[in-house]
Every structure is written in structure tokens, then in C-alpha cells.
Image 1 (cartoon, helix red, strand yellow):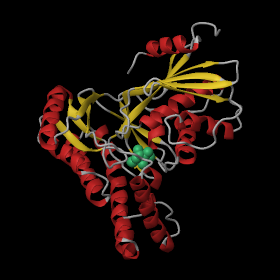
Image 2 (spheres, rainbow, N blue to C red; image 1 turned 180 degrees about the vertical axis):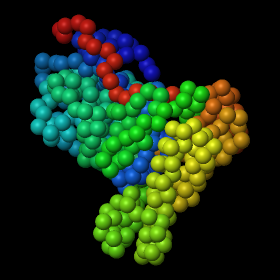
Image 3 (cartoon, helix red, strand yellow; image 1 turned 120 degrees about the vertical axis):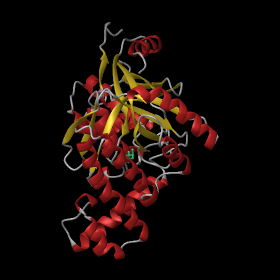
Image 4 (cartoon, rainbow, N blue to C red; image 1 turned 120 degrees about the horizontal axis):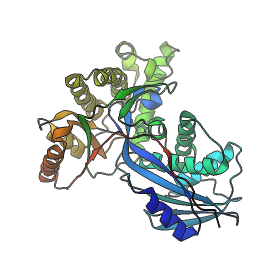
Length: 391
Ligand code: GAF
């Protein structure tokens, strides 16, 4: 992660004020894809890529937001903030302000600097990191504290209500509540979770196919609609089933013929994925890596064939990892249609694994991938306090 002191210096030089600095991580999901909005299970870990947000108050009633990544600044009157998205990077911080204003907070003037190293559009939740870091910074300025799960819900509302992406709770939850050296088995129904330690002998190797993915795009939304269609069909017969979390394979055998062919396949993925995700947490906790790898392989097949959310490049990245020394399990991670694969790899083999996988992928696909050796990190926090009085 970038040095918070560097963001502090940048902020001080730009705004002549000393900021408090907050960080929120991106995430990788080990297993449990498109299950969060079906009130099911996911098992993500926060990673050591993050967005940093530096904030200091202003007395002129303006809100000035600077992104170092985009080298772009936007200026607003605190009393006249935009109420709709404009397909701009600033939608995420502005969405945070809109949701907080809707919660009854009066938003004062401030300067905000943002910098992040979560690769954009790679399925590693750069947008959740941006929302959560901004949320922490602004609530700290307001003198308000939200518990981690509540903050995650507010940030999910930024996506759903302001940005216009119909995403679930996973990304914001893990960014706000991640625990160093652990994955979280999260129950997306009540947000309870169980910690699954990732032993130091196991490394997260994240391989970026370099195919861009977008949650705001049509594919994510249409998959979600198909999942909901399947739940609605089952619910006509069993009204207690409102989400696929409560559906079974027997329901699909009984009522699948009443669904569109796509809804049936999507439902098969979600129902089996929930079972695999809980089993994978047990396998990780009990160090049964053979079983964990088997479940990840099955999850990838289901995600690719039933959910049809992979692509040729990501399938190749998973395929090319097979048989490499140290591999425990590999699958496409995140919202799908591009982005990254997650590879659980024995630590002593991680560097060689990354190199060989990169070469194999470049040779086959003709694109040089970015491959990151990551560790499970802690969730969002304040990383630097204000040290000088504000001028
Ligand atoms: C994206 C969404 F933002 C998450 O809520 C989740 O649905 C994921 O895709 C798929 O598991 O990251």
C-alpha cells in the first residue's frame, strides 16, 4: 500500500492544510460469486491494495475533491451538491455525501484527496475501497461513528442508489470489516461472519487477465435479474423462498421447467455455490487444501458454464494454472466477465508460480498479465492523524 505520508504531503501542498488520512482495502473473493444479493454466503479477504483518503475542513463552504489517480479536481458548494451521478470518478465520493445527507447529516466544506492502488476495473473492488475510505473520512470529520457493518450498508447504498449499480453487500463489507490474515465466511442475510485463518504457508496470487470488467454494465444486472426470476418461480410454490439462499436443488427439479433456460442455469450456480462456499470455509479452517482446491475448481466450472460469467481469457488463466507447483486452487474472482483469477498457492512456490503463469498466459493469449502476490489485510482504518492545526 502507498505510504500515507505521501498522501499527507500531497494534500498539505495542494490545500495548505494538514489532513487526517484513512485507508480502505480492495478485496479478493475466494469463493461465493453472485450469491450475496441472493442472501447467501461469500468468502472474501481484504487485500494489500487500498484507496487512501485525506481530509481537512474548509471555512469557505466548498467541497474540493482531488483524485491523484485521475489528476483531476472537482469543486462544489456544500449546500448545492449534485443529487445524481454523471458517470465520472467523482460519483463515488459524491454518492457518499448524498447518502449521508439523506441520513440527516449536514455536510460541511472540506478538502479531500484520494489516491489508490487497487487496479481499476479488475474485479478487485476499487469502487468499494473508494466509497469506504471516503465514508470513513467524511464521518470522522462529522464526528460520527458507524459500526463496520452499518458503514458497509451505507456504502452499498451509494452503489445502488447513486451510482446505479445493482451490486450486493460483499465488497463494501469486506473493505470495511476485513481481518488481517483471514478470509471471512459472510452470511449476507444477517451479516454475521466466521473467520477463516489463511495460514502463512498459503499465498493469494491474483492474476489479472487484463480484460476489463464493470459492475454497472448490463451483464451483471441481467444475471441478477435471472437469479431473481428463478427465486420468484420457486416462491410461487414455496412462499417462504424469497431468495435463492432458501432454495434447493430439489426445487429446481420440481419447478425448473417453469423458468427460462437461463434462470435455471443461474439458479443452479447460486444454489450449489452456497453449499460450496460453506464447505470451503470448513476446508480452509481444517487445512484440508485438497478439498478446498476441488471446491474452487468446481466453483469455476459452475461460474463459467452455468452462470456464464467468465470469458475465454479468464478460463485460460484458470486452465494454465493447473498442474503448476504449489497450486491449491484457482478460479475467476469477482463480478465476472473479465478481471482477475484468484490462485491459492503454497508460499514457497508463489514467486515461480506467478512467473510461469504470466509467461504461459502471454504465450497463449498474447497479453502480458499483471500478477500480484497478495496477503489478506485488515479492513478500513485511520492511518494518519492530523498533526498540525488547520490554517
Ligand atoms: C461484484 C458485486 F459488487 C458484488 O456485490 C458481488 O455480487 C460480486 O460482483 C459477485 O460475487 O463484485
